[in-house]
Length: 326
Image: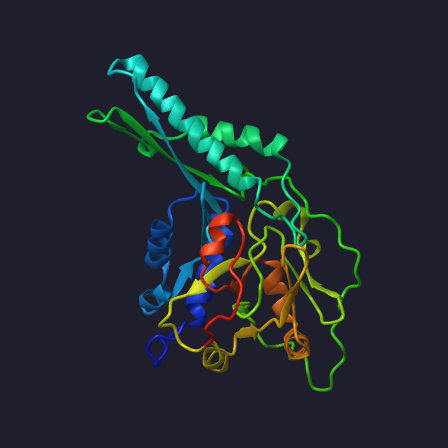
């Protein structure tokens, strides 16, 4: 696909590549945000590479560590002080550092909302997975400072995939009617190929949850975990969370220029954890006009754009308020 003639515009190919990379990458070992962006750029067509920089990972920083919602990864650090320079002293410091990193990971996992109402993971199941991941840390994640006698470890664990921390978890069933596209004259263009669905949630209070949902203004379920095969729920993210760089182009213009992109702008949120997005009637009309969009969402290729996390995210809560819109 040729590059956009408008400098700074996020192209459809860039968004599609990001969503595809995350959907496929959930089956692979996770890496750092910078490495993932580099990997995406390396696999992208030459014309699309510079434009990938307009889309950034959405990372929430907590007191105990951080959550990279785009790659689906939890990251913490731990340190241990060696009481002496003997091999046993250093080994004890390595163990202490691993244990501290694992405790921090547990603290974050205890606060991660699974569903729109803020349901939490069963730590009796997650705890052993964190301990196992901490025990299997690669040597490259462990550093020893012989001068200070300090061992530092960087703990990374995937949320999704066979070894993911949420593997096997299911969202609580939601008692609501399903939305059905109305029969609109001249609407659904069955031949139109939708490549990605972009959900611009920056003006809402929405914060990432593992199993988000989308509703109509009347409370009907438009999209939720029930639309995905059960075997896929914990193997990959339902949606790709991301944010735009400040200099990125206007989404409205981008949607007009890219016929394969459907842009939705939720008006509000629902759920105790603000994890359900409420679409406007105009957005529902877009979905009715583009039935292929549902397939894209079921494949995990929907991108939810969020405002950068604010200071409140460090306490485990999302920032609220007005956001700069494009």
